[in-house]
Image 1 (cartoon, rainbow, N blue to C red):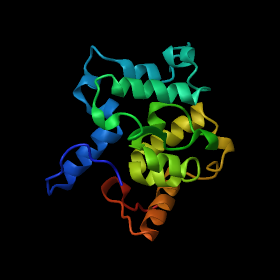
Image 2: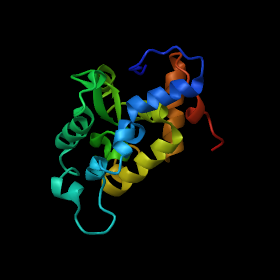
Image 3: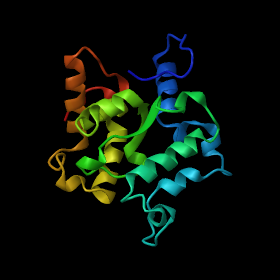
Length: 185
């Protein structure tokens, strides 16, 4: 389901998870993005101070195209070929059309054709792919900075959305593991 941008020859689930997460969340996984000299990821975070920050000045809350383009620019700037063109998209966990926010907590790099196919119709599949913790963060941001409280997920908590996605994936033979494990709700 995910593109693995490197040759996969390990029997380790941990190694597979590490490589998938490096692809899905490069701004959290790559050393260059954690380097104290490079703080571009903070341009994509809403201000916590009440004062407008770079995110607010850029107008990302109301301009999803600009948000996606600039996140993609941050990733593409080192010319890694596995993110070029339509191979990978900056996809929302909760789609903007469903009230999802345009924040880093609510996006991940996903296979472009899959993103185009599901559009705003299957947020639960994205939630199952990113797991419980990331879906909690995506839902919190989308309730705070988006309009999720008025969308189709207004009566759901994040664990319910992940579980729904897991069940839909399982119905076609795709199983989730580790952070996608069923939890006692």
